Length: 115
Length: 118
Image 1 (spheres, helix red, strand yellow):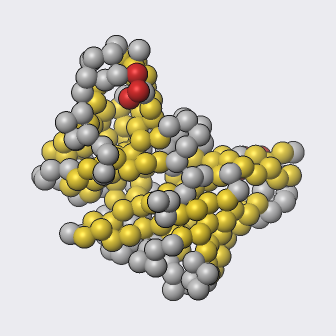
Image 2: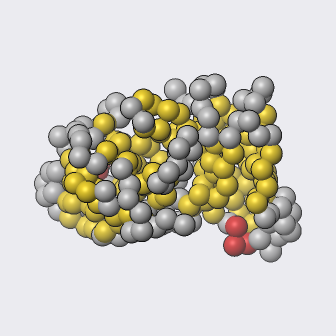
């Protein structure tokens, strides 16, 4: 059972445009929602994260919008650049007991920003 | 930010041999490290959670006798793929939980290790 659903699978955006990636979750016990950026052959890097008590968080060109009632959150990349071309993963964190937390990842979105 | 390294970055081995992958937190102590597996164009799948000084907790479907995890110190965890076969070929990624993360499960990821079993 996939607990975090991510869409779209792939996205093509023109340079300067806005890239939007959406995620939905089912488990209301999730309490931390990070986004990761991954380039080919590299490990994921934390981009931005949000907690469910906040509806929006902005860091530079990256914004997370969070809708707790709808159990959805999205990543917006403003003024998208070719260097943003990568695979983006949303994730959700769940306390798994004994002081341990686990991340559940979405399936990823391959973003291509074309000049 | 915190840095996590992996060694080797890639390895090619013959079927039946064992391969050890190291994961190190370079500038912080990590009481918890995680091991993930990623197939091409797919998401990260958690294999196991490794706590320093105790046995790893494996996810359902992951063979603990095949994927041996040792977390001997606060900065080092190792994954040994025993008797590797071609189906074990994958991208293995470790992560370490940030110190003082509190309720945030901020994890810093290593660069990954590409394993190819011939």
